[in-house]
Image (cartoon, rainbow, N blue to C red; front, side, top):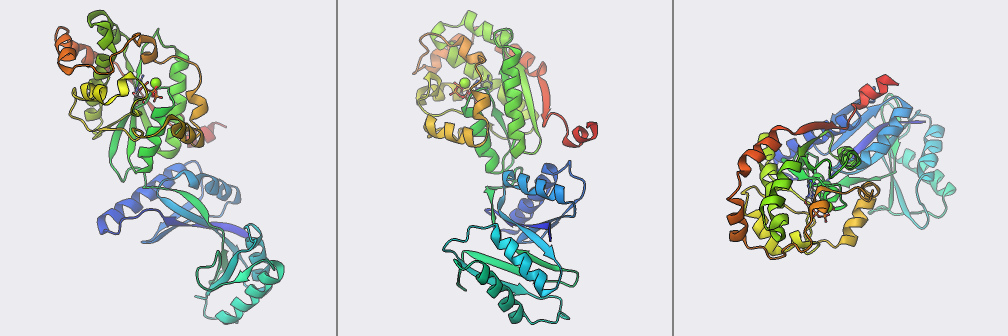
Length: 400
Ligand code: ATP
Ligand code: MG
């Protein structure tokens, strides 16, 4: 008895022809990428479901571990192969059911028999297996309409195939099916969560991080690398753009009245982000802002900061409470990285009394005294680009 295939049910799938095709091809590509270090699997995509075939038992286990982080999968079921003999079918059925919670559950067996020369009829197979299962699991009861557990048996010429376990997928849409956007990734708790939510809606991400050495150190950068690595688990491969931000930040602090430096710094970040967004052909900027959290996240601040760009700014966390965000951060394993105590460029330059209602005209007026354009160009040109996962999984395995 062994699992040599997995059946995948699609997530939220639009019924329209072109969207369906794009959904399926992105999902297929993302699964291929997630499993790229495994040697022996095949994917077959059909209109309503997808199969992964793999003869290597250890790799099959790994596939089952990795599939729950791929967006676009509603659920999946390991399929178990066994011989034709009724005795083998019964033993396998028992084993399949024993992995499930059976207490007080309803149950039925369905049989497909494409192997027409098989000596037993469909009904006979159903009865044999059904009564064997009920003998072994007396807590189950039979229910033909919408049972909790459906044991599916398929008799093909080469073997028989059984499945009953349904494993929850990540839901959402396959990454890439929803276009591309640039996520402003700080080392904090919020922005990785914002990225996760957008990946879940099928958006492919590139990341931008503003880095201000020597005010922020290599440890802070390492933290951002680790967050990017985590996000790449969900988003296949992801590029991170590190912007050297020190010079620009110092100029803002030298030239602008202290209480609007924060507003102006954020505006400069957005201008740089917009330039990178265009270069990488992304169509929106994402950040981790949530209304009212800090001075830069009031409606008035957002208005004054946002006015510097015409790029769409997506704020998936805007109406979430901090505790809700922390909950998700823990679930996606970014929380422990985010709370490492290294300063972010914004924390260090935060003025004592930042304006919560900055006046756009005033900010624009002060900014007009400085040639920010060339500073911005410099930041964009000097950026460092790193691809995640950092070492290609295949290369990594070859190194071992
Ligand atoms: P986070 O936990 O994501 O850092 P926060 O509540 O600490 O959020 P801020 O630090 O004020 O809030 O930042 C708001 C948003 O601006 C962040 O969610 C992020 O998208 C972006 N941002 C802030 N600092 C940086 C940075 N150094 N590099 C890139 N983006 C940044
Ligand atoms: Mg922060």
